[in-house]
Image (cartoon, rainbow, N blue to C red; front, side, top):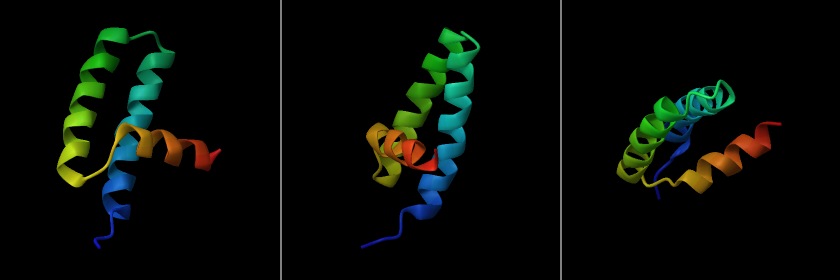
Length: 59
């Protein structure tokens, strides 16, 4: 079993950028970033749901 915490932390920063773009109605930029994030998540064994869950736990 590997520790995915460092990867999760790094991708959480990108996910926050994505949420900021959505908030600013920058839909095209957000969609492009979402694609990049999802591709990167596959490389580290995480999912979009992992980011959503982690984000909800920060509140």
